[in-house]
Length: 114
Figure (cartoon, one colour):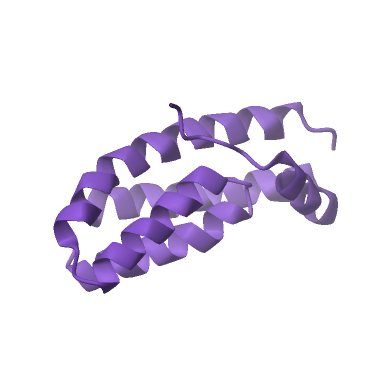
């Protein structure tokens, strides 16, 4: 089962507020920040990982990335509760979900009117 659901209603709400150009800029910033965080994730402490997933959880919702946000919540919860092996098992799945979701968001924003 693919986990890359995009809440188009939520994404469209932000599009109506900010417009296409601003949303594309926000997505570029999000991609830059998240790429840097993915690169540093393996070297991060549990508390740093928790902070990263916390930020991703809330920021991804701006783009309607519900499944990715849900995985971030699970990982954050596992890290808070010292279930490090459970969190480690979910991280590769979350990265795949992130990548697939980002591609969907890019396509939606490209097709959006102004």
